[in-house]
Every structure is written in C-alpha cells, then in structure tokens.
Figure 1 (tube, rainbow, N blue to C red):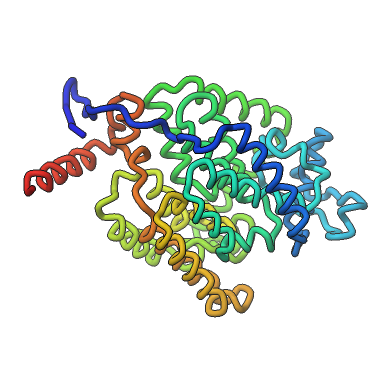
Figure 2: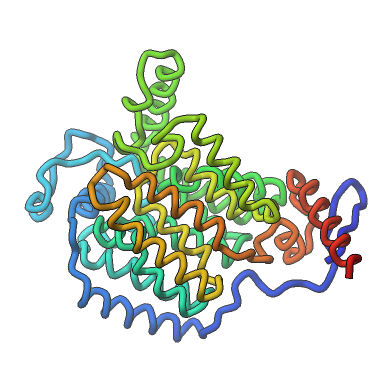
Length: 395
C-alpha cells in the first residue's frame, strides 16, 4: 500500500483489493442452505418466550392494516392475547413494515428459526465454518430465549452493509439497521456522513424514499422523537432522572445507560487502547463504542458482535465461545443481577479476539472504491502508513 497526497486529498495506491464479500458458495446454494437451515431450526428449536415477538407481531398487524401502531390504547388480537393481554407500545421505526410486515402472522418459532438460518448463511457466505459454533454463545442463546427480531435487524443489516457498502443496497441495509437505531448509533452516523461526502445519491435517495413514504403512512411516529427530545431536556434541567426516560425499559445494558458517563469514558479509553493498532477500523470501533454510549440496548443485541469473529482463526472463536459459556453461571445465573458485567466482558473480548478485516479499514475502503480517504480518517491513515514504512525498513 502506498499513500499519496494531491489537491489536498490523501489517496491510497496499489493493486485493487477483492470485493467486499467474495461468496464462497453460489447464491443458489446459499438459498438452499437457508431453506434447509430454516426447516431444521424450526423443527428442532421450541420457543422459550413469546412476549417480544407477540408484541412485535401485533405492532406489525396494525401497520399492515394502515392503523396507527403507536397508540397505547390499542388492544391485542385474540390469538395473541393468549400469550400477552396488554398491547405494548413499540417505538420501532415506521419502515419496519416494509421489512417485516409479511411476518405479522408468523409464530415465535419461525422468528427463532429465521435468526438461526440467517446466522448460518452469513457464516457460509463470509466467514469460516468454525464460526458456526458461535450460535451457542450466550448472546445468541438470548435471541432464542427472547424470540426477538434483533439479529434479523442488526445482524443481517450489518452483514448486508459489509457486503455492499455503496448504492441502493447500502440504503436498504442502512434503513434495516435503523429500525433499531439504538444498537448502531455511531455506525449509522458514520455511514450517513460517508454517503454525503462521497455523494452516494442512490443510497441517499433510497433512504429518503423509504423514510418519507413510511412516515407519510404512519405520521404519529414523529411524536416519539419529539417526546424523547423533550424528556432528555427535562433530564438536563434536573426535572427527570435518566431512569425515568430510558429508551425501551428501565434496565439498560449499555455502559453509559448502566453506570453513567465516567465509566463510559473509562471503557471507551480501554477499547481504544485494545484497538491501538487498529484505529482506522472505524466500522468496528463505531459498533463497539456504540454499545458503550447508547442510552439503552438489550442484552441479545450484543449477538451482533459475533459477526466480527466470523473470519477469526478457530482458536479465537473457541476462546470467545468458551469464555461465554464459562460466564453463564457467573454473570447470568440471576435475572437483572450481574448480566451487565458479562456483556461488558463480551464487548472487550470482541475487541481483543476479532481480527482485522483489511477491506473495512478506512484505507481499505478507499482503495477498494478507488476514492480519496474519508477526510476525518486521513491523519490516522497517514500515521499508519508511516508506521508501516518504518516497520518495512527495519527488514
């Protein structure tokens, strides 16, 4: 790799890299694997908890009927009331219906099976087979236990972004992840700024179209961000506590949500120290630091960290899995007791055990797309380039 600077822009020269994702198996084979995996998981895995999916399904049913799903006074359909009688207001983004509306009458068993099948396809497409074992990690088991769509939103969305990080497909992946923006606040901000900088009009127009059409269909969603801003202003003025306005619940699992700003600063510094030689991996860093600073996130959301070990050597995968299983009786024996410490451990271990994906460093992205390096990252890329030259000259 060579760095060159001209017209005020830092560029990377050298032979072009491979595409973002080089499918190991043909698409038709992956489709067959998905169907077989879905059937196997549907047959083998019985749902444990119905609450998360039942409330989501009811939310989707009102969306399918073009009714306002953000009305707290709504009731549950009779078939869903068997599992949970009270309608729970969900602040999911209004474009959720475009991605999951067809599943409004699906069972929890199908949602669990879809998550497992998606994981298998992701690994076979872009990882090493040994990473399949990570579906036994506690964070993935929590998906099974909860029956939540989180991995289908965050995990699949991140995978799609890593496969195609330009154009309309990027816009579709971005809006999928934005269904639950609290999981990827920094990554979504990073990619949006990058799209604007590189003038990726296909991605931006796709995002704009999905957003405007969905808000036009469900305008009452706008009441939620307005009330959220008002609540946090009340916190800043001391009229409410952070506990009163927690997004989605009263027991957040992010570092900031659990322990406050000073611990979040400390963990951020620790993550940056662990990633000292990998500071140009902004996508990974934005995900890791997003879990530190988001106001609220659920424990099963951490399953997305498993994606960063999909290409890691077998010993790293087994070590991460072993540490997760060993942590079960220590941190996850009691509900809402020590889980936060276990999730913090998984966060730090993901930084330690993940391996560099060269194509997703800032210099790698620039090289692959044959474009200047993203301006905010240029100083770090230049420093990395100088360090590499010093290392090479030593030999």
